[in-house]
Image 1 (cartoon, helix red, strand yellow):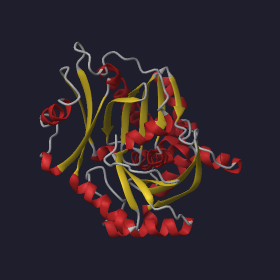
Image 2 (tube, rainbow, N blue to C red):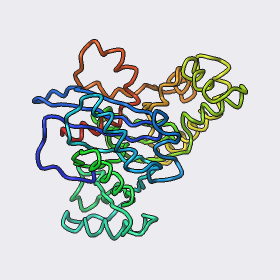
Image 3 (cartoon, rainbow, N blue to C red):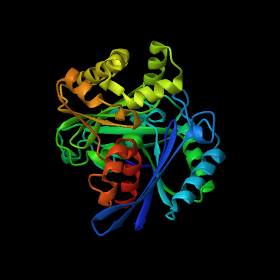
Length: 350
């Protein structure tokens, strides 16, 4: 599902992920069926600014389009990235997801029916949002007995305008905007047959997505992320924020002390996973996949696996992408944090 259209396929494409505290850019190329990593770049907000790129309280970007574009131009120049076609990700917190069912009807009748029904579900005036939708049960479309299940996403026009301005100021050709979750699914779960809980654990929020056979079934975001982990460590151990960040990074859940400190926050995420599972009509979640920069907390997969009693693994967005063997260790370490950007670049190469 993407808010854009494509007329031809260039050989290289950029995936751009403007997160809460970092900007990540991935450059992928395609030769036949083979997709390769050409380049990547990352910048943290504190390198240039005293505040993050966005906050959980605002759907719009906190810094000006000019500031973000300046940062991105520097990244592209330093990494010597020449590709100009790009897909930008839209944060799940800034997107409104909803599902609804329509009675059986023809393909010609469907668009008008979707727009009429969507007005009942979107909390903003239609003049203020851009929305896109897809049919979840495509294989049964046309059946006189089967209702049509629709997944819809709406994005504020204000945010779309900001991204368009950023792309223009960065001299990038914005080919599409897409919700983060679809990039995560594309980069790691598009061939998955089981029902999976896909977590995107960022700096300020965590999004819990239930994916069934590669299709998004539900999505829920909570205001809890890696920044909260650091804050809890700082408060509990009476240390400053920088020391808490270092302790979180170096020790993580390998430390019994930090496990005790962070357990209440992590159990909040567990509660939300169980709640989401109950809401998806009895579908049992077979596996949990962790993505986002804060999923790299040491020992996190093992903690969730013990508490949830099911398989837990870190997302691996580069598994279908060729890269030099010398980068193996780096790719393994950075993979979960780059999953959205990789998914955006792959969207461009489809």
